[in-house]
Image 1 (cartoon, rainbow, N blue to C red):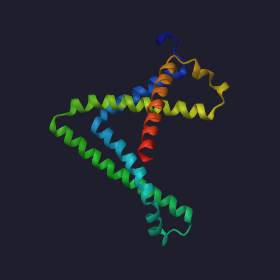
Image 2: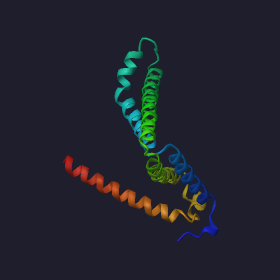
Image 3: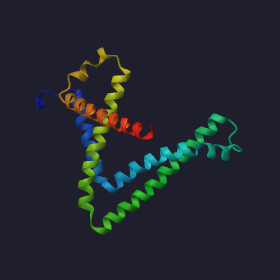
Image 4: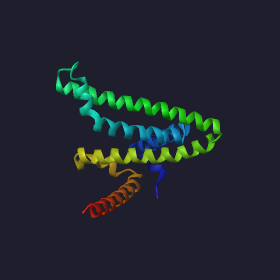
Length: 171
């Protein structure tokens, strides 16, 4: 159980990240948040799939190979994000017109909580990879970390089972 009277800085950072993520999703709604996430995934996939083709199109204007690839990746990534943003905005307007705004915002808070938890888990994972264990005493003193560790273990187990199943199918 969490002792709310003994929260440290890490606990408060976790609470702030979760709160901001929930409030942002409450304001934007589930549809816009989900499409925004899909847009980021699509931007990454599209930029990786088509960077070579875009780089060859830019060869006439950008002579430096590294610069050409950076520009190609950036154009594809940002262009996809812009298109996804416009689609998310239109979908948000459609939700508003249909009168599903309350449901959209309630579901948005669930999405925001999940996103906040994922952000915190990723940040803790990166911290643990980069910092020497002796420098993470403040992390171990957190009241919320045991709960996040339990969740991280569950996610790791879930992904390892998924990975094992995928390898069995491909074999």
